[in-house]
Length: 155
Image (cartoon, rainbow, N blue to C red):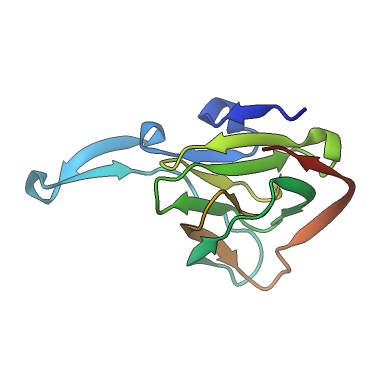
């Protein structure tokens, strides 16, 4: 049986940052009080040669809730920020081993920033959902994948 964990900053700390207003470094008013700035939500990390930050939209589509692989990006963090208020899934592991998989249920107002080298499953959503993704571009190959013989499933 799969244990579904609630996504909190404390539970997710070994893997990166939870991106939500509650975790902001500070909150203050700008633009003559017409805008609240929720400031410094996470720190993108770039390693390697000729790096720069990429800002993308990803459109996630539903797929079966099953995991038989993980990937990591050794040279940069990767942030996923949902653009709609739909819950979604985050699957991570400290090492690329099946028995280390952890499954989090993220709220639609929570994003995540995977630290460089954190093993995770690609985007998992229950419905079409758009994400702002902050990623890394550089000279080095920034993708490693591990496939398991088993499959983790839940509903």
